[in-house]
Each structure stands twice: as structure tokens, then as C-alpha cells.
Amino acid sequence: MVRVSHRFFLFCVCSHAPDLATRHHEIHQVLLVFALKSERYDMKQIREILDTCVSERVLVKIIFSSPRKKSLPYKKVTLRPMLLRGQKAFQAEFHYEKKVLHENMEESMVLDACVDFILRDFKQVNIFTEEEDIQILAPKLDKPRITRKSGTQKQKSLSHNQAKNYIVPEGTPCDFLIRLGVMDAKGKVFQKHYAKFRQINRFLEILQDVLPYLPKDKTLRIIDFGCGKAYLTFALYHYLKIMLGREVEIIGLDLKEDVITFCGKVAADLDYQSLTFLRGDIADFTSDHADLVVTLHACDTATDYALINAVKWNTKVILSVPCCQHELFSQITNDLHQPMYKHGILKDRFTELLTDGLRGLKLEARGYDVAMIEFTSLEHTSKNIMIKAVKAREASPRAQKEYQNLKDFYQVKPTIDEL
Image 1 (cartoon, rainbow, N blue to C red):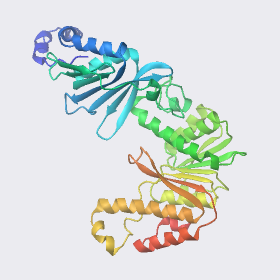
Image 2 (cartoon, rainbow, N blue to C red):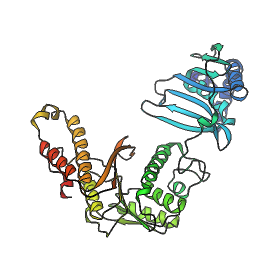
Image 3 (tube, helix red, strand yellow):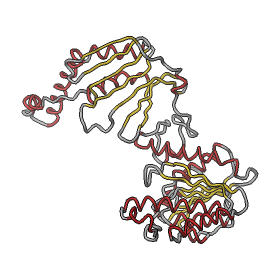
Image 4 (cartoon, helix red, strand yellow):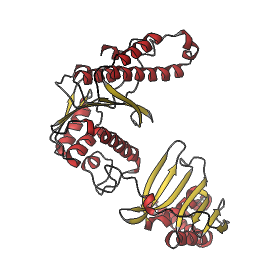
């Protein structure tokens, strides 16, 4: 695609067309003329260089930088060769201000993509092959400057550049991800849902780590409090029941009737027979036991009630991502920290950490090994804390004393105190 800025020329050629269809056809013809001219006079040499580097040489990477417009959301793109399901392919890294997104592309698509990046998005290209380093500066497409020097980098084995080995892999159709719109029928993950795809797999990696602590000779009873749209609830079922062949009984609980209706229909459509969705409040839910309790979208004190229930049921493993921790914001009092509290944003963040710290100590006091780990929770902030708790011992008086001392120091009474 070539962007043509000669609007006046287009207007003169096309403004007298008798109807919209004819006018559209004439615009297309004008654009085609400019595209051919760019290919012939502006981009021919660059395209030949790219074609040679991609198809014939030992390519290390290609970096596109120096955006043509400030509005371009990503500021750099890096292309590297890789192996994808045993075939040569390329991975593109799109560098945004605060994140990097990846997209895999077939080898046959790469040359056109490179040309498109130069025409539309970037003024500078750096190509690294084992034979030579090539720099292309094209602030004006009709006057590119090309410099070459001996190669400075070596290609790593393509096996080092393979796509991440996800538990639920890309490229293999997965029924619940297709049904929830994360991937298409061929297993390709939609770009707009790639962050969700990574989040699901990150969650399953954490689940994989705690599997040894769950019972091995019985049906696993799992409760997901505040399941929301249930991407991770479905992932739990898919991984444990379908991939590992474990017998499970999974309950997803949420307050929203429409969400529960939708999730129940999806579960029925997929024939996930031992996955149930119920409408209800976390604080009021009753059960005789649970092996795993998950709370990934439970806001404010809902997390506390989920943790309280989990401990009462002697749950083996708890995975909780708290959010919206507002309870202590209005309670906290400490003269030493008062100068900091006058800044609302600092007070808010501090009380969030204090809330989770107290929760962790309370769980330790009840005999859990607790780890605070990072987990991406897209529904709220980009990075949240996950409380990973594994029942490991009897109650700990030491942790209870630390909990009490911290609570008294800041003069707060959190809901988790009910535990």
C-alpha cells in the first residue's frame, strides 16, 4: 500500500466523475499509477535488497525505526527468523511505549510486510545478516540512502527463536478459545486478544506449579469466585480435564446474571459437563470443601470473604489476585506516615500493599506457605499481585503476632481479621 498525498491531483482527476462507482474506479487507477511509479523508481532497489536478505542470506534481524508520523502507536518493529511448527517463519516484535506485542508471519508474507513498513510507517531500516550490515535511510521515498559494512552479528540457531512453548499452544484449534473469540477455527490467535491469550497461559503455568500440592486420587473440587467472563475458568477445565484427564468439579460464581447465563451456555455448547456457573455472593456461598479456590476478579473485601471461606474449607491451594483494595484507605492512621498520606495516590497505593500484606500474614498464621507473585490482570491494572497460598503446616503463632503488630501500627481493622 502506498500513501499518496497529492490530494489536489486526485480531486482534479476524479471530481467530475458521473457517479460514485466511476469516481472510485478512477481513484483506484490513479493510486495504481503512483504505486507502480514508487515500485519502479523509489522502492525497487530496497525491495531487491530485502528480498535477497530474507530469502538468500543468513539473516539475523531487521529493525524498522524512526516513525514517519508521531501518531504511529508502535515506535519500532523488529523482525527475526524463527521455526514455527518445523517451518521457517518470522516473528515481528511491535514496540509500543509500555509493552511489546508479537506476531508470527509466514515467510511468504515477509517481503511485502517489510516494504509496507517502509512506505507507510518508518524512515529507517537496519538489516543485519552474517555477511553485512545494511542501513537504509528513507525520509523521502524517492531519495533513499543506503550504506553497507561488514557483518557484525551472527544468527542464533533458529530453535532459539521459536515461538514460546505455551501450555495451550497457538496454531492448534482450542474449543473454548474459539468459542470465546480469542482464536479462529484454524487456531490463529486474533491480535487484539493476544494479551488475553498470554494471560491464560501464564495462569496455567502457575497452576502447573501448584499441581503437586493438589490431591491426586480424587475428583478435584475447584471454586472460582468472581469468575467474570470465565476465560480462566474455562482454561482450568480444559487443562485439567481435557489435557491432563483429571476428574474435576468446577464452579464459577459471579453476581451478574447475564454473565452466568452466557458462561453456562458456552459450557453446555462445549459439553463441559462438570463445569457449572452459579449466580451468587462470595460472602454467602457455602460448601463442604474445596481443593483449589481461585479469585481473580473479586474486588475490595470480596477477596477477603473468598479467602475466609477457603481457609474454613481447609483448601489446599489458593490463587487470588486482589483488586480495588479501598477498605483501609479511610481507616489508616499513623503520625509517622502522615506527610505521605496527604498525597491521595500515594496513600491509595500504600494501603493496597498493606491490605495484601496483611492478607498474606493472616494466611501464614493459618498454616499456608504464601508467595506474592506478579500476574497480569487485564480487567483492572496492567500488573497485579497474585497471592499464591499452599496449605503446608499447622497454625503459625509467629505470623499471627506479626499480623497483629502491623495492624496495630497502622490502626486498621481489615475484613480478613474475621478469619
